[in-house]
Structures are given as structure tokens and as C-alpha cells.
Length: 266
Image (cartoon, rainbow, N blue to C red):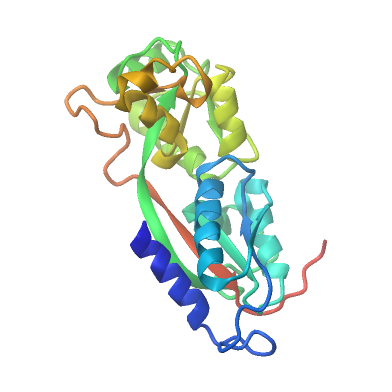
């Protein structure tokens, strides 16, 4: 984490923006980092972590602005509308800065209107179900889904999000069918998973960090009936401790800034 963070700061400071934001005096005011999801998700948590440490180094506050909706495209559009002066950054995932380009008719160009800064990290995907789901491992989950077609509900962070596309691939690979329930981000979906309003989610592992903590110690397990600890991970019996996703399934997080000014409606 420290190495990725250091690369992020070096990339930000090293850009020679024109006008008031010259390299020698940047930054002279607060920087806004736009998170394209509601507060409470993994991307939001990472942004706030980076923001605190960046503030200590640059001497200016990092304001986190959550703009969720449409699989993150609304937040990215907000970043594109901002002046390209280095004071607005866009943090996101492979969904928000890659996949939406092929899923939505965007009023901006992901390649031309945004300047990549740094790849912060990558992680595998996991399948996590509600506590009362009648399956103990991945094999049992697939069997239950086949026995109950179209009955299971899967929370996703928006149509076209990573969990949505991975879920479609999972259906095709396993011959199962279930219903997708779109949310404005992983945070709200996780709340409903904990409350057992949906059956399971397929998302990047960091979204389920509390579930991992619950299985890490007996003390955490004793709190399994509270908050985010109330969930279940599905793992193949032959590979204990491994995520239930394909080795090729994963997602990445990165940071970008506006490349040039662009006039967009709204």
C-alpha cells in the first residue's frame, strides 16, 4: 500500500499544469477527489485513506466528493466537467474508467478527456452470501441456484458494473439463473446483504474486508451477528482460503485527472 501511495503522490506533483497550478507552487488550495460511488464502499474507503496521507505530504486538504449512479459514469462525468488544473482527481475502478465506455452512451471520451495518473492496485473477486443462505461452499451454491432458478437475488453496484458482468459470466459458466438488484454503489448493497434483503454479491474482495476480519479470529467471529460481519464467503472445498472466483477474475483501482476542459450539459 505504501509503495502504491508513493507513486500516486509523485505522479500528482510531477505534472506541470499551466496557469496558477505551476509545478513549483502546486498545490495552493484544496484538492477534490471524486469517488464515483456512495460513501461506505471499498473505493470510498481507499480514497479517504489516500486523502489523509496526501494532505500530510502536500499540506492541503483533500476533499472527497461522492457522486454515485449509472455504474460510476456520473462521477466520472463530474470529473471531466472540472477545469483541467490538477485540483480535481477521479478515483475509480475498471468498471468506472473502462467498462462504462462500452456499456453506456457517454457525453465524454474516457481516453481523450482523462489523463491516467497511477494504477493503485488490483484484487480478486469474491462471492459472499447472506448468513442464512442454504449453501456452505461454491459447489453447494451452484447446486442451490440450479434447484431454484431465478429465485436468488444478487446485489450489484449498477447495471454494467463489475459484479453485474461477472454475474452474467457466472450464469453462463454454471448454467444457473438469478435476479440482479442494482444499487447506486456497493455500500448500499452491502447494507442489504447484511440485513439479508438480498442473497449474495460478487464483488472485489476489499468490499468484504469486514467478512474477512470476522473469520480471522475467534473474537471477530463472536461478533458475527453484528454489522458487516454477518455474511458468508463461498470457497471451493479443494482450496481452502482461496477466493471463489476464477483466477482470471479481478478488478483494479486507479486515479485520473481531467485532461482538458470540456463543455457538458448539466
